[in-house]
Length: 264
Image 1 (tube, rainbow, N blue to C red):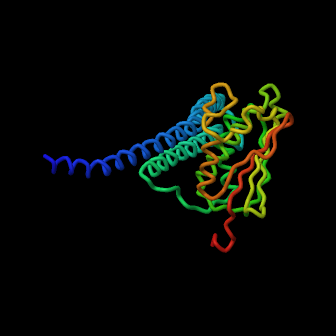
Image 2 (cartoon, helix red, strand yellow):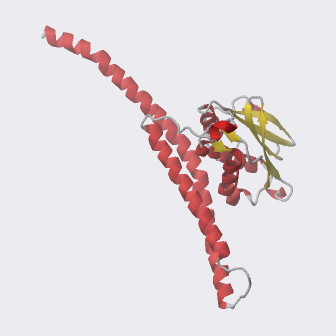
């Protein structure tokens, strides 16, 4: 019996270690799942709006065909464009779920070299149905800037920033509202600024803006900026609030550049 007690004492530290490791992994998985659920909400909402838009396009095209409309453009061109947008959004959701499964299994983020212009264009397309009634998006992004981060991580961060910028804009001033995305080479690598013409970040939340569950939006989860910064920091980059006030807010993504010779 004494031998059994000694055996139990020897086994317990290992068992406790296993339980702690399991708890830590489950905690990490829960955090990743919360971020995924938050980020999935945006493209899923876009998917619903795109489906509604496709329904309207099909109705218009059907009426045009019945009326015998004639012209250089097919009445179904808008339907085809809507289908392309739906396919891109669905594929982005699929990739997000795949990356979640990989992270949950202990695998790190994908390495990559991403053209900034392509990531920005994709983020704009994926958010267009959510932003178009709030603000106009303006871009100043050179075609040759390349950063050392996988494309989906950068797109997810940009989606968060663009949608936050749209939420900051007053809904009754859609024609005057602007969201400006500017990318440039800098000493630290590449910076991508997302600026809105909203009323600024409220003072009480500025110092904890990147902490999970911090938000000034009604119904907001307060996870978007925390997840976006985490995604960029995993790529040795960062996300910062660089300016805010009554005339608008600017967030800056900073990422390591990929030298031209490394892209070939």
